[in-house]
Amino acid sequence: MEEFKVQVANEGHKHLAEVICKEMEESAKARGTGIAKRNPDYIRQKMEEGKAIIATTKSGEFAGFCYLETWGHGKYVSNSGLIVSPNFRKSGLATKIKIKAFNYTRKKYPDAKLFGLTTSAAVMKINSELGYRPVHFTELTDDEQFWKGCSSCINYEILQSKERKLCLCTGMLYDPVEIKEKKWDFIKKSKIWERLQRIKDVVLLKPLKKIEGLLRF
Image (cartoon, rainbow, N blue to C red; front, side, top):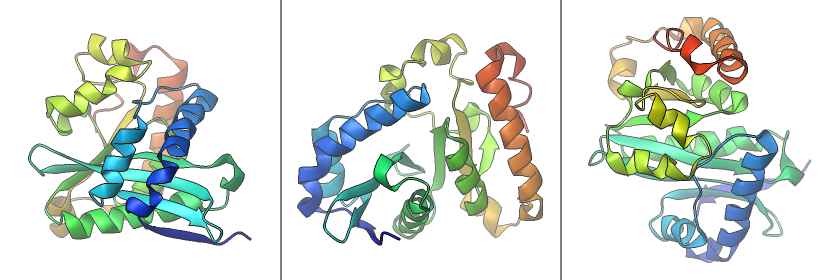
């Protein structure tokens, strides 16, 4: 089995920025879903700021990536753009990258709420296991710059038509206050995951207007 090095990206990884952007685009096409596009300069900036996680093989080949963004003056943080090279999928690498990003973010921004938008059932499962819960978009950041980033997604018109309340993506949130005060019952995680799967099927297969009620927990 291939061994990977999963670490905080630095300037020494900047030469992989174009490969990462291409992989993000190809991954979105393969899933038939939208994704906010990022250019190589943006990815390089994340690496320079110490706000990216990268996975490579022993030989230095690109294997996976995700990055951090802060919103609302640091009140919210997102782990975005999670991808794994096709050569290394189904190896558990996505989980390793996600856990590394989660732990790094919690250490770097201990009081911030972590959130994400995803169409990936695999990412939803990982998030659920880390303590995220599915939420209505109104519980996410209201930072205009975040929502502006969705404008390059193929589903942006749907988001706009629903007044930013829902889209094909599922919103998920990790609130450190909830965790500390034990307001979120993790014993029910298996049932939560089953419900997430049902919601995902509805989102992808039926008109959006029929799923708005399901997204309100």
